[in-house]
Image (tube, rainbow, N blue to C red; front, side, top):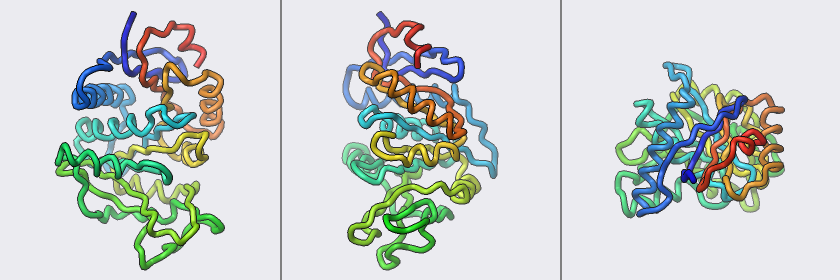
Length: 265
């Protein structure tokens, strides 16, 4: 019986590449183990990083609670070590807990994770968004309250974390992501590597909307609870949009999964 917290299945072959780790122990040990796993995943994906041609890797799941935000955050932190350059963790979840909130809470036990004041990274995120009852945003929804998104450096690291600023919305407004290639082109010009955390497909279409604009898309699956048809449907929708589906992360995996099960995904 083989124990593992995470495995990665590359497409289109879907060949399993197990990454062993312990699922027990103190929280810090778990985080270090996951960080190590994500460093190996970075090496497997091997995104080419060249000056002036930034890369974008998106993480998405079919259902909430499959660990997408945890995987995306750990992957972004690992990427700063592997890439030796600035990495942006772009959080497109506009409801529920955010990556910004996680870092703020984590800073109470590790000051190296404390987020600094907003930074001007030369990227205007305003066109990325569509507001309820409006088309693509061309100006600030409430200029007096500032931009819709800000970017913050985590401690002295090379990691930049985005924050969606709900206070910039007018009362009753909601925001969705628009399919705006110009934003992503500008992001690539400014930032060498971007990790995108997108909401579960069952909760929001935002992840699917931007999937064809990412260089690589990774589907996160909770190994022992996600239903194969649901995962397969999302996989097919991602591919149908012309996105580059790099593979599937099997998260929270505890037992050996036979080869025939891999091939069904």
